[in-house]
Every structure is written in C-alpha cells, then in structure tokens.
Length: 241
Image (tube, rainbow, N blue to C red; front, top):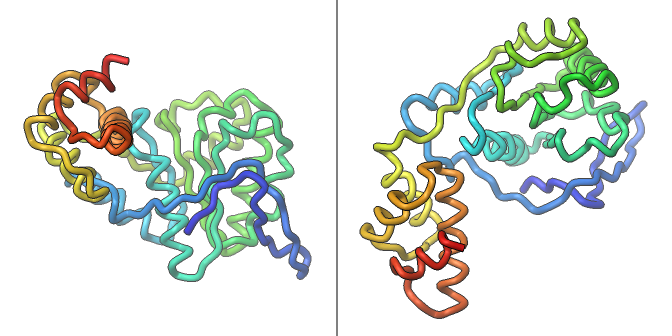
C-alpha cells in the first residue's frame, strides 16, 4: 500500500547507505487500477502506465490522473519495487532537497507538474531529477492538468526534456457512460444506491466523475449516520448544501 505522507519515513539508498527521510505529505492510500473506470479511449493510458518508459499523463481536472499515479505506485509496490508519489502543489513551502537521491528508487511519480512553471528553483530541481533518473534505473512519470507542450517553463532545458517524454491524455468519462461509471464505483464500495437515485444525482449535479464520486461518498457516510437508505431527498440534502 502506498503511503503519501505526513511524518512518514521513506528509505532511500544514498552513497551505499540507508537513509531515512521524512516527507511532509501523508495519508494511507489503497488506489488500484482495478478501482478505476476505464473507458476504451483510456485503455492505452493504462497500458503505458504499466509499461517501462517515462511518461507524462495530462488532462482536465478531476479526470482521475492523481488516482492513476497513486495506483501506479501501488502497482510497483505489489511487485516489490520502490516508488514515491510527490504532489508538487503541496510542496511550495518546502525545499527542493526533497527530490535529492530519488533516482535510487524504481519509480518516482510527480503530480501537478504545471504548478512549478516560473519557479526557477523547482524547475531546476525537476530538470536535475530527470537527468539523474536517465542515468539510473529509475522510471519517472509526470501528471499535469495542462498539455505539457503548453506549460510555460522558464527553463528551456526543462521544456525540451519534457517534450522528449511520451505524452498521453487522460479523458474524462463521457456523459453517456456516467451512469455505468457511477454504478461501477458504488458497487466497488458496496454502496447501496438505486438506478433512479443515480439518474437524479447525475442530472442535478456537475456531470463530472470526480464530483459524482465525492457526492456518492458523502451520501454513503450520511446514510450510515442517519441509518437511512440513499433516497432523492437525501441526495438533495447533500447536493444543495
């Protein structure tokens, strides 16, 4: 299981010694590719994530990209390989030394790549990490809300390096498949919700899988607290607040 985390010790091999480092982001994470609703247009993304090449995945917010990165880390963990997930947008107040020696790992997943654009310190650190990974057996996978060809990096060398990495778009769930996708998620979590309630939820909220998953989780929690079934009145209570 991937641990993303607050005061979590990670073991990095440095200068033939084992050094324990403390990273400032943390929560247990059980993300798995099996728990992601893959439409046909995202099957190639899955195949490339499970491959061996460096990769940049990009797409709209709440398309599930961060979930896929975390799933990839767990996929490596299941194969007894070391990995680390790094959400750059949470590291603005931290030093770039957090990236030092990560090339000793088997996999580094870097989320929120676009958030460092214009920050010379972080751009340089990411450029150096890519170079270090190229010289080692460490695979590096990036994630961005923006097509990396349009990220305004100040460091031209970083832009050039990123352009040489294979890029794949993660597409959001199509409107026609939202009902099936929500049912997939509800069944996965053993959440009891009827087809009529799913239809109401989809038609009365943003037609975004990320938002729908949030609402389903809220409904599940509230229904257990109130010891009530998930009904349309309960959906209204959650979505109108």
